[in-house]
Image (cartoon, rainbow, N blue to C red; front, side, top):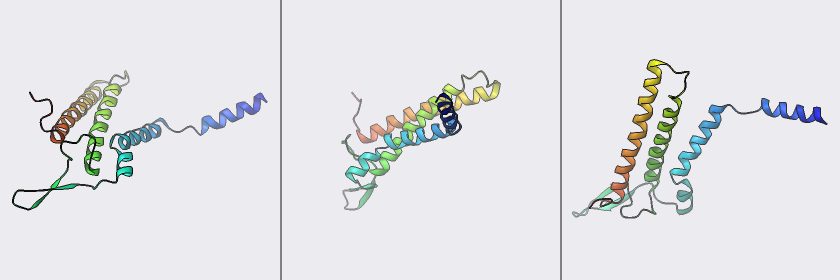
Amino acid sequence: MLKLAQRIVNKLEERRPQPMVVFALTLCTYFFVTSGTAYNLIKDPPAVGATRLPDGRQEVSMFVQYRLNAQYIMEGLCGGFFYTLGGLGLVLLDVCRSPKLKGFVKGFTFKCGAFAFLLSIALVSIFVRFKMPNYLQY
């Protein structure tokens, strides 16, 4: 019985997925969750909207303004990309702490991670200001 259990454990260990495959699947899942895929499937919003200008023409609108609980499909995908960019920045900042990295590669990884994280914070802030124009203004 013990040998059978040992063989099963060995077979399972041979079939274990690579860590980067697990990371890629987790990152894709994170992107789809933060981009509001479930909301898009349930509510079925349009990809982009349209606003009427004072002269009667229509203009493409990427944001559902003044409504935090509604979104267009492209708006959700952009937001999910910004959040995923920030997450990748944090992953790169964690990777740069590895003692295996030396010199230029360590500095480059740190700069790329910090840039991605700070860029994502700035873009999400701009994104929220487009959505709610008077947000955090006194």
